[in-house]
Length: 71
Image (cartoon, rainbow, N blue to C red; front, side, top):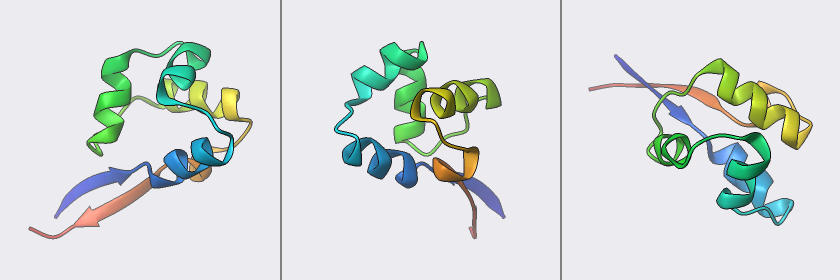
């Protein structure tokens, strides 16, 4: 099995908060490369997730899901 990550919860939360990806990038002090990786469902560091959660006042489970994917 290959594992992927789903950031759908993050994108939905951002829509609810009327927050753009650029806004999140600036507030969480993360790079555009990190935003791009998340857009592709790739892994990012826990430090990055922690920064995002601090900005959005939420926990890890509110922004990312770990998804097993069969090949």
